[in-house]
Amino acid sequence: MSVITARIDEQLERRLEKLAKVADRKKSYFVRKALEMSIEDLEDIYEAEAVVLKIRDGSEKTYSLDEIRQELDLAD
Image (tube, rainbow, N blue to C red; front, side, top):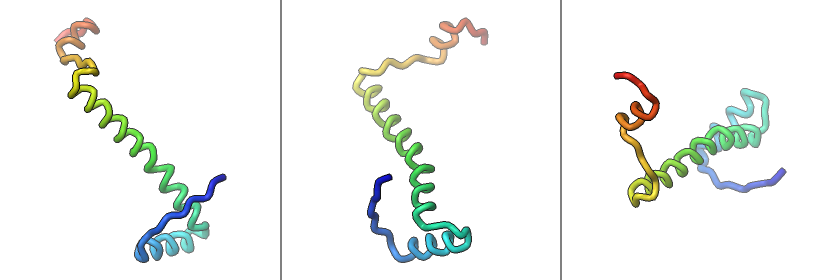
């Protein structure tokens, strides 16, 4: 397992310490959990931004709702 050092402000440190004490867990547990919970969202955001850029420059094909309905043979 790797070790990462991060600087956080005093208010966040106090909140983390309080949470760790109440839950009887180490602060590192909550830091790890917070990263696990947010990293998937961040990955999705960056992937979506990349697709938007491709759409804007014309390298990503898009389809209208009517095209999708026709392709899937869906009635109105």
